[in-house]
Amino acid sequence: MNNDKLLRAASLWLALALLPLAALAQDAWDGDAVARLQARMASGATTSRKLVEQYLARIDAIDAHGPAINSVIELNPDALKIADELDAERARHGARGPMHGIPVLLKDNIDTGDRMLTTAGSLALAGAPAAQDAFLVTRLRAAGAVILGKTNLSEWANWRSTRSTSGWSGRGGLTRNPYALDRNTCGSSSGSGAAVAADLVPVAVGTETDGSIVCPSSINGLAGIKPTVGLISRSGVIPISASQDTAGPMARSVADAVALLNALVGADPKDPATTANTRPADTDYGQFLKADGLRGARIGVARNLAGFDDRVDKLLDQAIEVLRAQGAIIVDKVEVKGGKPLDDAELTVLHYEFKDGINKYLATRTGVPKTLADLIAFNEQASAREMPHFGQEIFVKSQASGPLTDREYRGAAAKAKRLAGAMGIDAALKKDRLDAIVAPTTGPAWTTDLVNGDRYTGGAASQSAAMAGYPHITVPAGFVQGLPIGVSFIGTAWSEPRLITLAYSYEQATRLRRPPKLP
Image 1 (cartoon, rainbow, N blue to C red):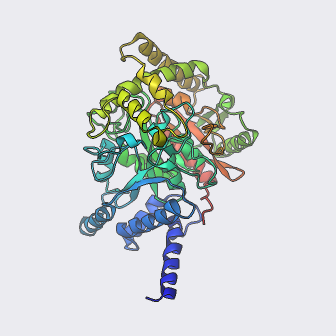
Image 2: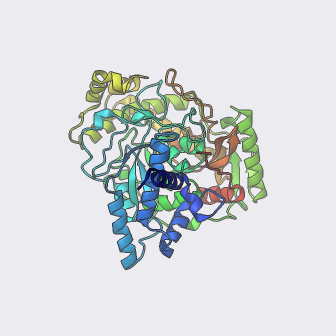
Image 3: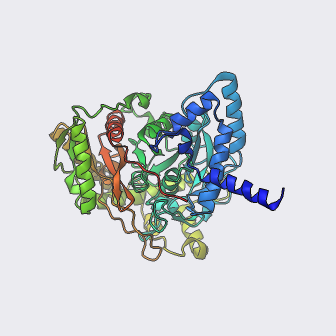
């Protein structure tokens, strides 16, 4: 092939790689990719292998090169083989379900028992792969999803330093916001948010302890679902807090997020929270995608979680008018507790639970440090690579914590649940007979600053739901100078069906999600 032909072939490849795959479905709205791609595979217009090839090309062109978003930390060397197997199975027996053949990215704190590493972004865990899949990965594989790779994250899910920069890890470097490359992606599910926003994958799995699904979803213009603790198993997920940690879906639409949620949920004997008596039976959450679901709903507005930016307040007011126009009954100026009492209780709980949880987790891995104390020592020895921008004061303080039998921990854990749950969200819902509480998820993305660390521009919409272990869904609500802003729907334990209906109805009435303007 001569040089001109080579150049034309390269140009065609690049054009295909840069074409958002959502555009292949010829829909102006950048959402519902899972159903549309599934329909294309069912009709024979494409295959899982072709989708994987196209997404791999797009990751190479946009994530590794071009704008260099740097959201994907590792690709699955077996992805094409898995896609071929799923295509052959579809031809013989039909699809397993909505996720059959759909590529998915996982945050790099979720174990996969394959050739990929699981590191939480730390070089300390880069020695050997995990021994087996996390339970949620087992569920994804059973649903027919193609695990395309792992996403970068805020190292150790943002639980290492008080001056950390979200989206940076020692192993993966810095993830950039596809809406403005100098802006932050929020964390800790930074790579998952940026990858889905840039259409490097239809959907991704994030994890949250406090804000780590909903903040990057809001800042990257996504729908994100932080479920009730216990709906999705945490076994095989690198922990911070046994009382607050959960995985959850991140997508470009509520319907996409629900398709992924259905594949993730399930009771796991290794995670007692998923087998509790209060946990409802598994259900198809797709049945709650109702476009008229706001009619008659009573929704409270948590004004005390707003007021940090008049431009965001304006978007909140616009969202409230949409809710009202769709038939919702609005109760304004509902108060959800926040501030220092919650901060103090939460931090105490996280320090204690992290030390206990990470030591137990490390015992399941080979070829890596075995205790939190070993991790601290590793970081000191590898400080040039692991701590060029910020330290590990949180690690040190967590290491100084005692066992979970300590009175300080038990008191803080009870206080956290009481203030955030019974006296917080539940009290607000009960007082005005509310179905849900709404608030701005966070502010616009801030300029990334590796010297001074994060500079959050929003309120604290995530905190009470995180501490109580309650569900929280964020949906795009508009833009501030081209930067996405989300609105949050928050409810009591196991209220995912109601929140999904409300969030979907709002989304369908607005369709405010717009893709970033990538080359």
